Amino acid sequence: MKIVVIGGTGHIGTKLVNHLRARGHEAVAASPSGGVNAVTGEGLAQALAGAQVVVDVANSPSFADGPVMEFFQASGRNLTAAELTAGVGHHVVLSVVGTDRMQDSGYFRAKLVQENLIKASGIPYTIVRATQFFEFIGAIAHSGTEGQTVRLSPVLFQPLASDDVAAAMADYALGAPANGTIELGGPQRLRLTDAVRQLLKANNDPREVIDDPRAGYFGVAADDRTLVAGDKARLGTTHYADWLRVIDPRSKS
Image (cartoon, rainbow, N blue to C red):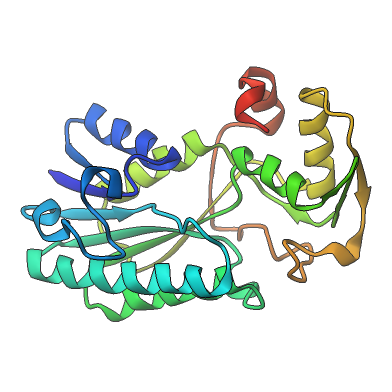
């Protein structure tokens, strides 16, 4: 089966393409560097010719309100139009747990627009909302850093390994369309500040983490429900402590 992975040369995309190829499928890694640009539409028709499934794991290069909305609107419209022309039978997209609960954020408003474009397209689809990746916790720490202090909200979240995300996305790409939303989360819930403390300790990083309930999540109000998956979510198998022990510190910063 031919499966086109939009964002196929990125962190998740590369792992996903490898999973699909290992399972005997023709997985096409589509990205601007290879002449396929979902935002402009360049190369989409050629890439999607003969494809049965499209998996979109691309992310906006900018999280600023205007550019991120333009990215997900343009890519969503171009992809669904090209899929209808090519007769694609299943559109799978990677989204974020809590998207509908964080609409004060321009990024999450844009992700919800992307989801709604897919739902309205008429193409059978599966929306996969995942929690934050272990590999993103360093960026969370950076977002709250001032000097040698990291100020973050101690809300619960449920991070998971990107390897578990890629494996799940491969399963969904090869399965029947859900025509709905599936959640994917880590095997345990952690306090955001505790997870960052563990990461800094593993990296011998001297920054001090301060619990500040007013800090929110990237400036958006968050509570203990905002960033965790529901009871019916598929759970990854990699625990955070195990990941910290075996991953090269350079990939955790």
